Length: 355
Image (cartoon, rainbow, N blue to C red; front, side, top):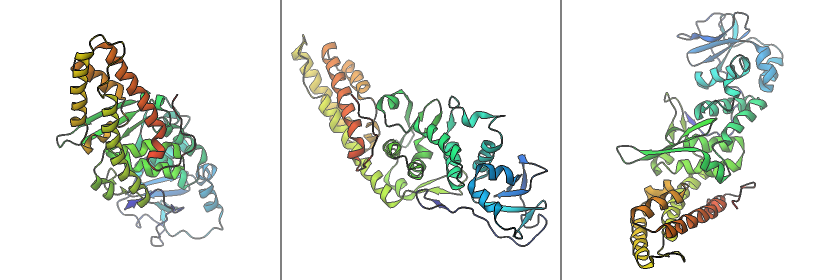
């Protein structure tokens, strides 16, 4: 099953089984350990898990369920434990978290505590279900959490924890962490772009697109399978074009911006201009060689000042020239951030320019 969240989502996916009044229509389905209430009056079938819950609770939070249950009563297509059964297409994990948000926000408020970090898959699943069933408060809570990582402010971006590593095949990936959210480029990049489109919060899009930059073109074309292998996140054609173009842009940025920053210009207060000029030439040459490959594109939103500082020490640049390099790196990065949406071909209001 391919998932494109930017497209229309069906309201309720009910699989018509045989007209049964027992459980035989659902062989192999087990009762949920967490959300099975003996006094429940509706059963949600999610793959091999059954949740016996209350129409009143679903109706209280969701106008979609409210309208469904207020419709003129008709015979159900299937029953489980004597109750009408609805079959949902989502994962048991996502539905379990959704019911936790509806039933247990007081007893276990983890989903609503922003100092408790949640994995992106949990937040994405909750937002997708809240959007599908029109649970406004839950949608708002998840967007607030998403904005902590997919930010439009460079200072907030730099304040995040970025853990970028490589594997044995030379592929690079990153994990971004805020106090509220953890996002992995390996599993979450494409779903993040689709989720931002679904939420219609354009200011989150540039950093979401940046995560796709850690993938090769064939992955962007074919999509990323979700855990369990029952669904695959794929990009829309328009977003695929944006993400492919972004790989070229970020590779170009990394190479040309660093090359400009490190061009052999000594500081006016330098006391060893000849030595620093020679050192800067060697440093700039290394930048041109080391950061020219497309795979270096993932450095594009890294703090260039850190790279420059390390190289200044490596090549023996004096403190005055090293400080001048870092200042140019900071200034150039602010310009890059301010121009990021436009360079990606995106028109975004509310993007925060850096002073």
